[in-house]
Amino acid sequence: MMQEWLDTFCGAGNYQAKLDHGAYRLTIVLELKEKQKKEQILSYWKTLIPANLVFEVLFNTNTHGKVGALNHGELKESGWTYGEIPFADLSGYMKVSEYV
Image (cartoon, rainbow, N blue to C red; front, side, top):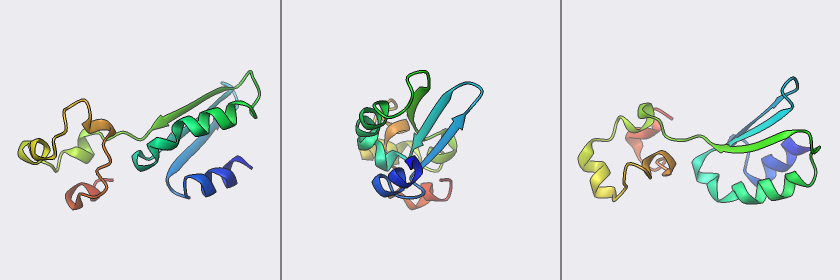
């Protein structure tokens, strides 16, 4: 049921969900273009999942492998600071899309 809901709400391929039965942990990793949906996912599913299950929603942040194709000048032109780069949606940059 959760997978169908996430496919509809986020779109198939825009998240990864993992249930670790041994650790009682449910982790959902969202793609950055879906980051505005984090709070809605948390608030909706916290009411439906068991209280003893650790539930977390994370982001698939930009690592050096994704950002490495951009040079310092391109990053400066974009106006990003180094703290924003991990959470910026870089899918519109052709150079970066090779690494995603």
